[in-house]
Image (cartoon, one colour):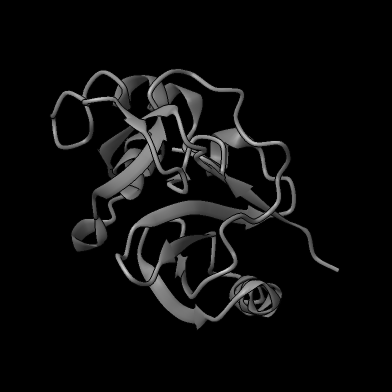
Length: 167
């Protein structure tokens, strides 16, 4: 069985986003009184009382800056929740937020969209990832929320090194 690694927003990018997001705005931390926000720094949902911030994040732009790729018109930026302060990150490399409809979007090494698939829940993620990574042109996939289109996290084959998989 193939192993896949889910990658949160990397610590270096988080540090920058907590100062100014990818739209150039200063973050405005707030106390999450209800909990449940999907945190892209540690790939878990927030709990009531945690300090979080909603920032604009451009994952393909950050990847392009690191690799020299040019995603062209596929460069997107959108809102993501992260802890307002540094956190410990995820407790492993497993998939997160799989209990709802998601889009698994496939990308080439150049950051160009190669296709996508709507998944209906946790049981659909394995087949969707196998289908994506069976194509040798697929370098990575993004898992996105269907209802808002927000980036949730990047997935790579196996335990790919952080330098090749995180923004």
